[in-house]
Length: 224
Ligand SMILES: N[C@@H](CCC(=O)N[C@@H](CS)C(=O)NCC(=O)O)C(=O)O
Image (cartoon, rainbow, N blue to C red; front, side, top):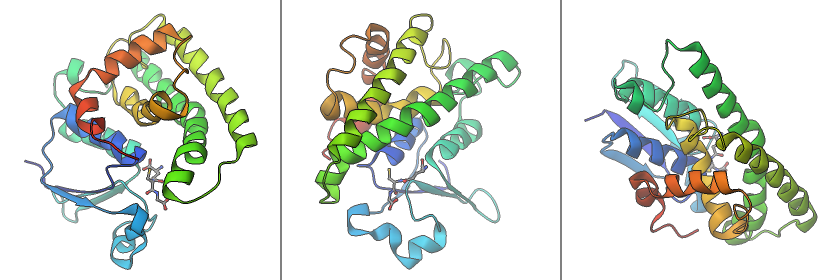
């Protein structure tokens, strides 16, 4: 069993990115501390002392002295895959460290997820989903029109890519596929349900991702 404490609010996308990774790795985390963002628990002094960024997810790994304190969902996911992942490369969620081409493809896919997909999906979901349901805020309709155009453009490019490969970074599942899942879930379920209608390759990838136990575990009872 690991010596990790996970600070999370399991209803939100960044923590969900990590939950998927933890489930895929089969990693057992006994100490899970829910931090209720809607009650601003992440802004309390005791949490800010651990993570001055005041956001979740966050981990404390007491396997080291001093313990490793780590923020940023994608960095944590990569760390967990490296530190606790399978030594069998096909199941490791990371590219082969000796294969520079596989690493290059992985980094490219990771960059597209963060700078192209997340950049628009995050904003669109904030406007159309989280603002009205969590923050009592008003959706900026004009901004959403532009964000939808942005999503269309990115998902069209992904569709071209996935015509030739099964997963985002090549022919095996990596953490990058998992990074896409939380925002794709909300797009598909509520914000933009027709998004994948005309993108058959992304749709096939999405069917594959949603049939995994990690997805069912992380999203089956989710209410935002
Ligand atoms: N880039 C960070 C973003 C962390 C983040 O913004 N988390 C959100 C939940 S999805 C949060 O804690 N929001 C509370 C706030 O920023 O006040 C990551 O990927 O972990």
